[in-house]
Length: 115
Length: 114
Image 1: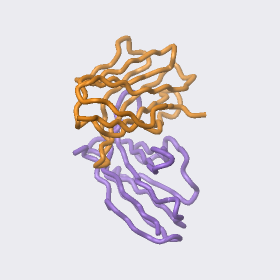
Image 2 (image 1 turned 45 degrees about the vertical axis):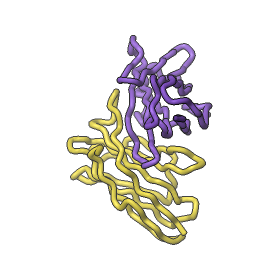
Image 3 (image 1 turned 180 degrees about the vertical axis):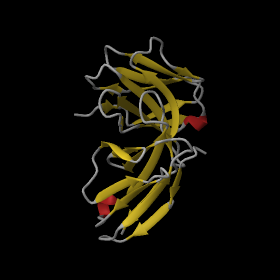
């Protein structure tokens, strides 16, 4: 079974609008971490944001925020005021800290920002 | 620049051959991860090393092997290459491979098997 599910293979969003990228995860481990990475067309992997399973507040990093709904096992990335440079592939990932610490990635969502 | 160095950037080889991909982690990072990214499979975790010891194993084929050396650099060896092994191979590092640390990724090695 997939541990990380990203149901949106592609999205088109108008510049300056907010965008939500969906991510659901599956784990029985009470201690885990959730990550979002961005991969632009140049290919590098860029860390965006992290949320720990015991964190009380939703994580925020500049224009990025993570809508963490633990009961629903959901960790959606919200990008506010989207920019053309946000066009990229976005990956959600999870580490189960009581298992073997490997970080598993979802299949990604390709985001296109339209001018 | 993430501080993680991967060489070579591109590699073109033939089926049946063997190649070695190299990764130097960020200074001070003890943990190294290898991932394979292909169009249809996304980012697949292969293997993780911490301070020279294997810590976690993913969907790594028996034809593939890796190791981390005392100077903490790591090598991924791919043998008896098949067309389906063509992919972008990423190395990533973190301080100790646990908890909250994010991974810092190298720029990847693009492997083309012809």
